[in-house]
Structures are given as structure tokens and as C-alpha cells.
Image 1: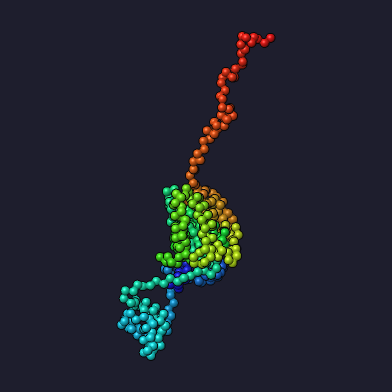
Image 2 (image 1 turned 30 degrees about the vertical axis):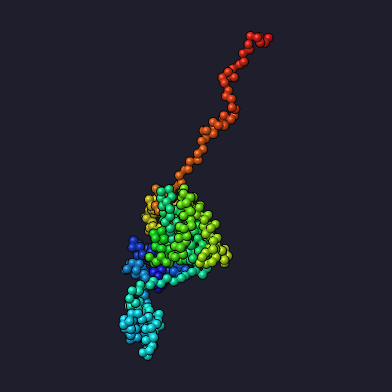
Length: 445
């Protein structure tokens, strides 16, 4: 299973390298130029190390992709000649079939008593498993090894949790947990599981907790999207996709989600829920930083925060690198009129790029500012000719929270202030006219 996973990781890496050069829309000259550029560049391999790939190897991968798709990029399993004689294996099989209750240890003892060199009992167990020889009524066991990263930021695991209803819509928690310390590195409650929200959670985690060497995720749409792949490539992070239906692979974050349900969500429901996502995120952040990060973990016997900081504060990435990592990019071929189009917008680029396949790098929330790159070299910014869309179709901002009535009666406050100024006794009209003396007073001379 480990060899098969490693082979698929290598195939994912190969596809990520050749995905642009394998485009059937490219001409022979365009593909040749792109392959030469890829051969001159350093790539981050599946094991996290930098490597260079020869042009002949790249051509071989492209041919394999055209011939059989992704499966053709997976190395076939190695065939090793057996070290144990077929006669001994046949004898072991016959002994097991004769008495299915015989254990591998007992079969080994019988073979040794017959004067043969017996294989190890684990070898016999694997042999019997391949043949489907098990005791009657025994269920097929599924082994789950225990694993823990040796230090902080060696491995993060990311996943999503389906949460409560907030303003009539389901909320989702996108979170990443450090495998060594169980510290929650990046997290965010949001209204959907998409690339924008996922990158927001990951970016906040990297900005405050450092860059992990590897990230383990499943094969959900947001976790296999090109923006996440590009972010990991820029930061030098190895992106690992768990095998389908292998929940135990992400056991630590699944266990954390159980804690969220039993300790946070139950209290949220008791208080009547959250008004909006902003309040939900505020409450969850307070619970994580004050309660979860400072409580001794039952497995590690230490608090997640103290174990994470045991080797000192992590090195944080610079703002320029962080900004570059979370930009999006798409590839376009420059037309004869020096133009490229991107989601309904048209831009002019350098005339030297006519017929070239260029990379357009941009912020998904601002499609008016496009940087043009060719063979990893900046070629200036594209000049907008027509802008019909300002944000990427997948960059849908969350709805602004509805206004909450304040209960303030402004006009009533104004009226009360006026009454206070005038005093409690109202002024009558007679007080405003001139005083007229009576007949007894007479007139003033």
C-alpha cells in the first residue's frame, strides 16, 4: 500500500510538471520551447527536494500521458524474483488447506520438522493472505499503523467539517492541524468548500505558524484545484492526497472534529447559535486559542501550543513570498493583435509575445491587474482593453452580514433634547406679546 501511494504521488508530481506542455492545442514549436524551459528549471519533487528533469524524460512523460492518461504516469510495481522455492510455498499452502486453523507459526514448525528451510511466519501470513486462506469465519483484518510527525511543521493535515446552520445556510469549517503537536494552525468557518475559502484558512495558518514541509488532504474539489497546487509549489510544500475511503489516514483531524462537535458546537447550540459567520469565527477562535491550545492533549501529554513551540518560534514567510504564493494563474496564447482574454476581459500585452503561450498571474478578486510571465520571466502588466468582470468566477465573496436593528430612535432623542432645553413649563403665546399696563397703573409720562 505504501509503494502504491508513493507511485501515485510520483505520478501526480509528473502530471503537475507536464500539464501545460501536454496541452494538445500547442504547436510542435510551442511545446518544444515549453519543454526546454521546464528542463532548465528546478522542480520540487515528491520528497520535497529540488531536482532537474531532462528533456528526454519530459518527452517520455508527455507521450505516456497522451497514450494512457494519468494511469500511464504511474510506475508499474516491481517484480522481484521469489527467494523461496515454489516447492516450499506449495507445501505451506497444502498444510494450510488441510487444516485452516493452523497458524503461520505452526505451518512453519511443520515445514522445519520435514527438513526444509522454512520461511518467516510473516512471509507465510502474506502468502496465505494472497491466496485467501484464512480460518473459517475470520474477518479480513485491515492494518492501521500509528504515525506521528517527529517535529512541528513537518506535516499538516487539512479537511472540512460540516457545521451548523447560520442564517439558514450550512456553515463549513476548513481547518489544518499540525501532526506533531495537534495545534490547529489555520482555520475558518465559511459558507462553502471552495478554493478561495480554503486558501484563506491556509494563508492565515502559514502567516502565523510558518511553512509546513508537507500537507496531507483528501481529493475534494478544493484540495485538488490548481490554486492550491500553485501555492504549495511556490512555498516548496509537498502536497499529498490521501487514498480514497482511507479515513484513518486523516485520523488526527477527524478526532479534532469530534472534539469540536462535543465541546464547541454543543455550547454554540446551547447559546442559541451564531448571528452570522463573523460571530461564529470570533467565538471559535476564542475557544481554540483559550481552551483547546492550552489543554493537555490525551495522546501527547502536553498542550498543543507548548509542544508546537518546544523547538522555538517557527520561521515565518515574508509578505512578498506569501502574496506570490496565493496569486492565481492561467495560461493563454497571445493573438496576432497582441491580445489575451481572461473571463470576458481583453488585455493588450507586449508585441514580442505574439503566438507565445504566456502565464497570466492575478489576484482572483481583481481581474483588472494582470501580470504577464513568459518562461518564468516577468513581462510587465497587461493593459485592459475591455473589462466586463472584476472578479474570478470562482472568487465569490461571502454575503455581507445583514444590518442588526439598534433600537435607537434618533428623532425621539432630538425631541427629548429639545424638551430639556425648553424646560418643563411650555411657553404660551401671551408671553411673547408686549405687556399692556392696567388703568390703575396709568401711563408713564
